Image (cartoon, rainbow, N blue to C red; front, side, top):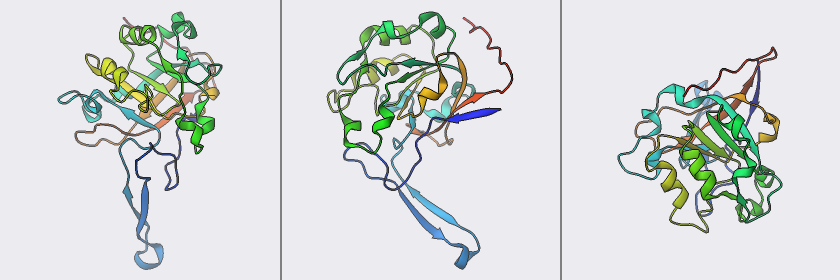
Length: 224
C-alpha cells in the first residue's frame, strides 16, 4: 500500500491566518532530565491543514467528535483549477460530473499550496461560485477540500456566506490548507482525513492521506 501526504507540517514558524498566533511547541520533559521527551502544544484549532464541521459556524450543530469514523474515509476526486487566476471563480465546467457523482470527497486544486509561507498565499484566491455550491449541497458528499485557507476569502467576505450556506442544513466537513493535490491525478482514489477526538470540537488539524494500493483497485459504485 502506498500513501501520499496532503498535509502541511505544523511548526512554530508556519503560515497562519492573519492576526492568529503561530503554534507553540514547548518541550516540557527532556531525555536528559526525565528520561523521555514530552511537548506542550498550544495552537488554534484552525491551524494548518484542518477540517471544519457545521459547529464551526452554527451553535447546536454537529461537532467533529459527533461524526462517525466513516465520515472521514472514502473515495475522493481532485478538481484541477490551477489555470485560474486571482479573483476568478471556480465554475461548474471545472468538474467532471460523472466522476464526481461517484466520489464522497471533492477536493479543489488551485496550486495555491506553492505559495505556502509566502505573503501571496493570502491574495484573492479563486472560490467556488453559487452553481458549484448548489451542486455540492445536492450531491451528498461527505466532505469538500481546498488548498487555500478558506471556502470563501474571509478577507473579502467577513460574513462567511459560503460557510453558512454549506453548513446550514448539511452534515458535511470542509477541509482547508491541503497540499500536494497534484499527486492524486484525475481519477478516483481512497482518501482519509482523521483528527483527534476532542469533545465539542469546532474544528481541528488533520492528517490528510491518499491511500493507493500497488495492486489494481476496483472502486465500488457510490450508493444512492
